[in-house]
Amino acid sequence: MIKLFLGFICATALCVVTAHAQSSSTTTTTAGGESTTTTTENNGTVTEFVPGTSIVLSTGTGEPVHYKFSKTVTYVTSDGKVIEASKIRKSSKVRVHYIKDGNDMVVDRVIYTDKD
Image (cartoon, rainbow, N blue to C red; front, side, top):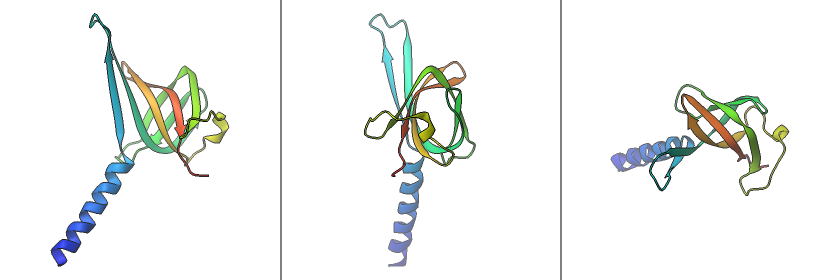
């Protein structure tokens, strides 16, 4: 009985950590196979935010992750409604959609996931 209880606690803790730091990735290749673009999404809590310039997220996996913004960034709610950048603040929960460009991670969409 104790082993079952401890197993349940460990499994629950693992699920919470995994869900908090979850990211997804999509890779597309042109017909000729000449270029590959990888777009990725990552969840986190905003630790720094400069609208139109950069965002830093704490993803729960150690060091904060730094992102730069593309020339056009869209800010939306989790249901797709466009919002103003001013809605994003320190400690907001967000998901960022970004493209890896050399050593930079360039965000083109910030999805505000906090519940109001």
